Image (tube, rainbow, N blue to C red; front, side, top):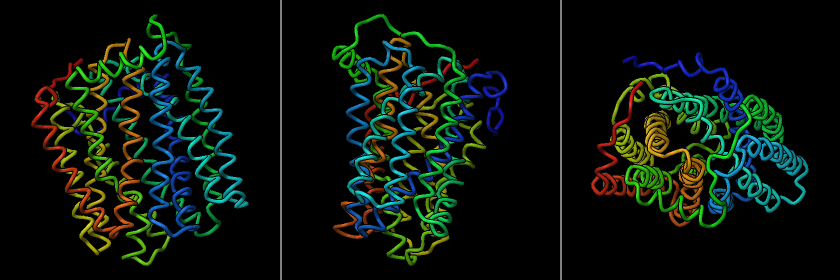
Length: 406
């Protein structure tokens, strides 16, 4: 078993390779956009609660649209759905760029457009997740998921620091302009996919949503994996606290703010480079739970430190644990789920993986507003440790789950 990243999916599947390259380029631009929105709101309000509100504005439409989309995502051509929604995302991103440059509408307009962007991503994200198990099977599936997370971590590593530097030099509007431009790479990657067909012949609607929820609830590995991801992010997500901690302890400089997210990505990239140690193991559920605990402990300790190098090192450890946890969760969920339910379960996975962090940012912002950034970070880490332990004890099927090997 090689410790390094398994590159076979990129070598063996040209379609997956094009999709991965497009996602990587677009994800890099997306980090500029994410940084820009948080910095724009903080710069106009200097309110931790307002920054946390970006999490609520993102999470609510994402959850609602992901659930609504699960009513039909297994009944339509997912490729066409993803192409159309990505094109709409370009228009929304262009409007956010205009707000940043002109300040027309200010924070309310930016938050409204952020909600629209989130709603579109709630349809695009599950569709993209469902493509990978169609293109890859067996241990190539775990390797492909690891490569997808590597692209995300590369974007996190390079994007926020570059966005902080660009903001310091030219202003936050140029970050959103760059984000708009890189959406074209996502379109190119999706265009390379073969024409899709509906995964199921059943009727779309509320019954389809209920059937997907029932399948997740009655399948312990899927249920446990989604809950483990939710408790890690809802209780311990640190991103909304970065501007607060930066102001409290490190002078509020934008270039330092960018280093926090970059530190998460450094750990994530290192873990992705060594992802062979994770994808080659046959018990991804146990690995998911272990990494969830490490993530929570590292962030809790970061909350009580005032030394910048130590904080960055702990964030790197958290980023590494998160990478292996995400790969393990995806391996469990996508391996267990049959094709007829893949779109609906991918919607739930998208809610857990994307809405969970935004709800966590809301929680963090509210707790920080009532106490401090460091206290919110430490309390969240401690809570996540306890919750992860309870899931491990109550879901033995997740701990013992084994994946097939090619």
